[in-house]
Amino acid sequence: MGRAPSTGALVALVLLLSACTTPNPSVTPAPVPTRDPNALNVTALLDLSGSRAPNGGPQRDALQLWADQHSSATPRVKLKIVDVASSPSKTVLELRRAAVEDRADAIVVGVSVDYDDAFAAAVQLAQVPVLFTLPIPEPATRGGSWAFALAPTPAQLARFVLDDAALRSVLSADLVVSDESTTAIVERIALTTELSRRRVTANVVTVTPGDATAKLRPLLVTTPVVLLAGTPRSYIDAARTVTLGTSLYLSYLCEFTDIADLREAAPLAVWPGSRGIAASTSGGAARAAFVQAYTDRTGPPTSVAASAYDALGLLASAADSGTAPDAVRDRLQSGTFVGVATTYAFSPSQHAGFDTSDLALLRYVAPRVPPALR
Image 1 (cartoon, rainbow, N blue to C red):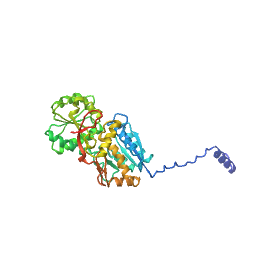
Image 2: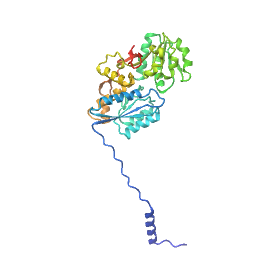
Image 3: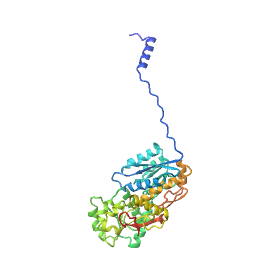
Image 4: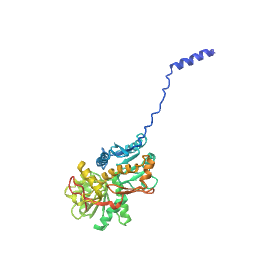
């Protein structure tokens, strides 16, 4: 049996190992960015690339217009625009990044989202006001949430459109068309629910961009009321065949390029939107000035662009006495704010603030000309 090493040998071994071991580097925590008390940090999430519709370009233009017009205002709005590239996963990731890493005081979401439990949890965890410029369904905007809807809800839009359709035809053979995109699914559900409430069974046709024309052309000839759910990109070729006698209702989210692509059929189509963006609006100097400034810069504004413009105005107004997110939320949900798209009124129990009396049916006039009221 070998001899046990002496105490001196053990000490020498320990010293040798210590000398060969790389010491752990000291870790200094990264300093937390200091908030500028005179600035309101706002991150806007938009689809500026990818296939998801509507494209965020009009909203980006509206946000930049507001920022340029109010560059010397207090609080100073520091705007950051992030392209989420039509990715639902990136939308959630950037929502979290804005709240945690960028320390945004508020977030504007200008993309279509599937507002499920997981997305609702992400909004709640952000712990900052999150303003949606596209329609989101109830109960996303009920009390206790950080979510605020600046657009009408899908249910409000469905009710408004079907009220008009009922004046023009008996609601019995209406055609609801959906390409089952995120926005189309939400609208299709709202339309069929509202028709069911009126004891009407909806005639729902689902299409893809590849088969939409073949499926729809024969139906459009014989159907008095046609409701196209979601952005109309998939339906354009078929919709060009619509003739006088058919009421064609497009989505609140339609873009002017889509309507122009209808060509001769464009005058036969209408869509719900804010009367504040109409060429003949009588909504006051602020609305008229916005429509003119936006049209001069990039072309006629959409209702969604108007809501994006209003988002920064709402936040700046609510942050007038301080930019702490909880204080901004409290002011948002306890006040009335006059915007260009509508007058917004929120409460602690209801965060859908669009005044539906400002909804109107709009029609296409010409390129670079704001829409007209029907």
